Image (tube, rainbow, N blue to C red; front, side, top):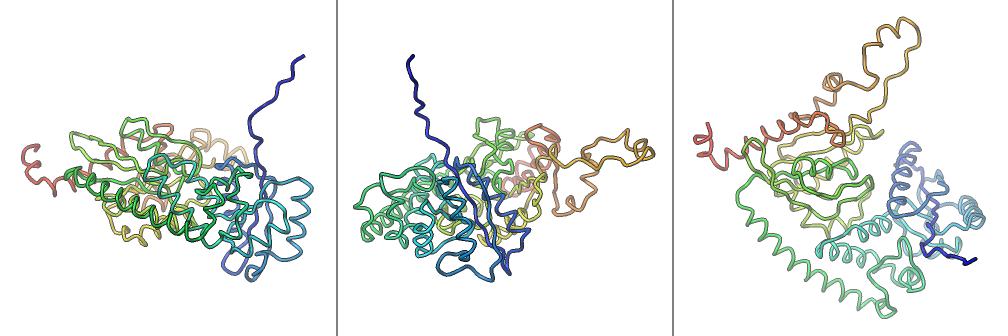
Length: 402
C-alpha cells in the first residue's frame, strides 16, 4: 500500500491576551478579544484560549504580570501553541522578554493587521503602502525581531518585506523606506491625475467599519464583480465604479474599512485611500446593525472621519444586515402568543424606522445587501443625494431634463 502525505501547511494556533485597566473595562476587553480572534481567523490562525488580566498599567518588562505570564507559559507549553497575540502594541523589549519566556512567536494587534493587509493587497500601490508600513513598524524592533525576518520561519506575522540577513541593517531599511516613499509619491501623482480625469461627476464614497458589507453594496449597485467576503479587511484597495440611477451618473468608491486601534503606520501610508474619502462629495456610512457593538463601531468611524477632516460631508447612513437582527423574546403566556401570532419574529422594517437609529442622520436606510432587502429605498436615497449635488455642478442639466 502506497503512503500519501499531505503537503498542506498545518493551521497555526494562537493564544490571545488583553488587559483590563482604568481606560478599558472587562466588557470592552471581551469585545476587543472577540475582534482580535476574528483578525486571527482572517490571518488563518485558530484561537485556542484567551487570557485577561486586571492591571493599572501594562508591565514595562512583559506587558502582563508575573503570575499571568506563568499561567500563559504553562498553557503554551502544554498545547504547543504557535503564537501569542496581544491586543495592544508591544515595545521591542517586551517582545524580546516575552519570546524568551514563552518560546513562541509574539505578535501584537498592529503586526497582525499589517499581516492581513500584506495578504490582501493586490495593486502595486497597496502593496507598496503595506510594505512601507511594515518597514516603519519593524525599524525600531529590527534587532529584537531578527527571528521574524528569518528564512527559517514562516506563517502569520512572518510575511514581512525583508527576507535576507542584509536587510536587518538599519541603514538599508531606512533606504528602503525612502525608496518606497518616492515610489508612492509617483503613484500618488498618477492617482491625482486619474481623479482629475474623472471629470466633474459626483463622487460617492462607501465608508464604514471593516466587514459591514460595503463591497456587497458596491457589487449590488454597480453590477460589477467586486470581491466581497465575510472576513476583516476583505477589501484593501480602493475600487471605483460608474453607477447610473435614473439617468444621473456618479462615481462610487469602495474604501478600506476602519477598525479600532488601526496602526498609525497604515493610516499614514494609505493616504491615497483616505484622499478618496476626503475628496468625495457624498459619504455612504455603512453599519452592520446586527453586530452587538454596532453603536461603538459607528462612533469609531465618525471619529476617524473627523480626524481626516471628512466628518462634515453630506451622508447617507445605511444600516445593513437587518436580516441578521436578533429575534424578539419568545412569548411567556397564552395572551402574548395570541398577540404575537401575526407578527414576524424578526424586527420589521417599519419598527426599525421607529427606533432611535432612524434619527441619527438626515438620510437613514435599513437594508440587507446580501438578501437584497429594501434596495429600492437605498437607490432612492442615493438618487436624491446625488441629484442635489449633480444639479449644482450641471445647472443646465436641470433645464434639459425637467
